[in-house]
Amino acid sequence: MTEITDGHEDFEALRERAVALRRAGLSRRQIRDRLHVYNNDILNRLLDGEPAPAWTRRPNAKDDLRARARELRLQGMTYDRIQLELGCSKSSISLWVRDLPKPERRDASDQARLAARKRWEHELALRDTKRLATKEEAAEKFRTMTEGELWAAGVALYWAEGTKDKTYARRETVTFVNSDPGVIRLFLAWLALLGVEPERLRFRVMIHMTADVPAAERYWADLVGVDPGALQKTTIKKHNPRTVRKNVGEDYRGCLVIRVAQAAELYRRIEGWWTGMVVSATTINVSSSSGKV
Image (cartoon, rainbow, N blue to C red; front, side, top):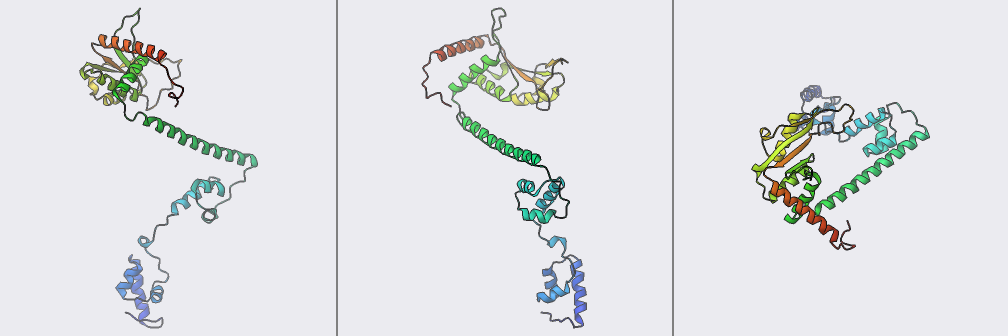
């Protein structure tokens, strides 16, 4: 161990070495071990005035909060609002922003509107939580579907969205059009359940002329598991200048048209299934408790 006092001639020489090591980026422990100075008081005097290198400083967990608090204060927020936003104490906020100018005091009506907005935001958050919980609970009912449930769902889905035969226009074809990817997946699963071979399926995109047509074609081809080149010629809808369209943006991909080749017999069965379901639904005896949701 090195023994040294303030008045010893070796002190200045040792201090020069300690300062040089500090400025070279060494920590206190490294300097202590290098110089064999194990007395903290002496080591403090040797390093007096020399800041620690940056790498030895522990990160302050509140640095981000402090920066955000100052940003909010400069935006004119009060301590109460900053506390509500960041969840930290007012005493900490006061220390962090006390050098910044105070925001102009709002009148009572402004404060009332702010309080009302915060209450409404809280109410909306509660509603969203309840809404999601209801959806999750309902989804559990169909996490697994029986073939019978899929069959019934497909019949109803086709009769809602598919083409129908008319007395004035005989069309015993199976053609389905929809823009919802989930609906398309369910319809294809239903066709597979019915034993419709994939090679009998024809796909075509129907989309507005102002959309990204190639991107939509790639999207639908990927969804149904075919090469974009296997799609039939896309149907382009012309723009009506008197119509204000809302189906715009990156999520707009038009509709996918699915046609089943050689499907006259299948269409007749679908129409018969639907007719039977309607008759059955109007005659079934539903108890007062079984239909609760």
